[in-house]
Image (tube, rainbow, N blue to C red; front, side, top):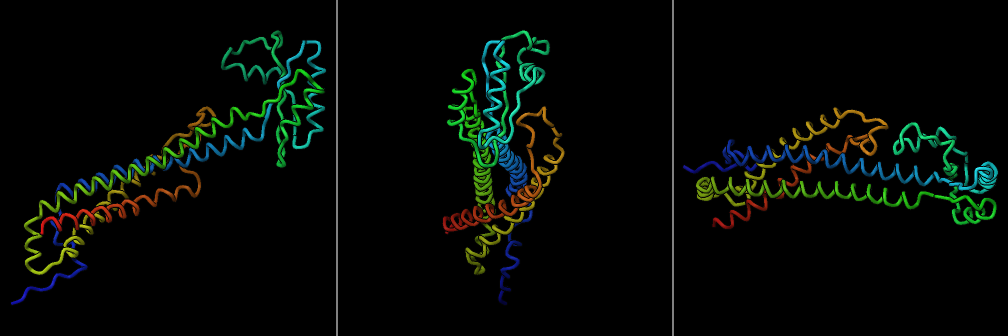
Length: 294
């Protein structure tokens, strides 16, 4: 009496349904997916932060006026006249004493006597969409108001944008490391499962099962467990991001951490990617292990 052929669509049934390697795969996938959601949120938030800093600082500039008290008003009016007739300047205004006091308050406290201190006067200008020729404006200011110095925020903008870009890169690197950790853990779990089922593999070979069929059995089981664990970890990660409190303006660079708008769709790619990593890692480990058992 001949044995019935093993059906390929039920090949995963030859693997014992329980076992530490399988449960470990599910737990590892859940934990790594949870971390991947946070790494993805960090990377996207860093990108938004870099864009916001770049746009905000690129559109504004400051003119600092240092002059004797008797000439401060004259110098300020001269600077404003120059700015009103400069191409690329959308608006310009002198900061009031209260505004300058608010700028200095974090360092010197709220009782700073701005009116009695020889502080420079600040004029804020906003660039238009066509841009501003900073060098030409500096030359005009030197001729019309010798005590005026233009600060176009270049020295502040570049380090901030570079830091945010580097933080975004670190987020993507973290995602890559998480994927590598998942692949390594699943490979170890698959090797352990194959070694524990060496007798089952021998029996399957005796009844005519090929190594591809046996490998498919382990691949399906581990891929499904990885997908289930990653889906649970992703759901928990998205829930944690949704429950993060709003920091508002006082949050500084923490403002904007998380997902915004259609970016909430990005975490949904984590479970399929985890399953793909599990599929590739388990298949490679299974075929390599089976060749060694020959």
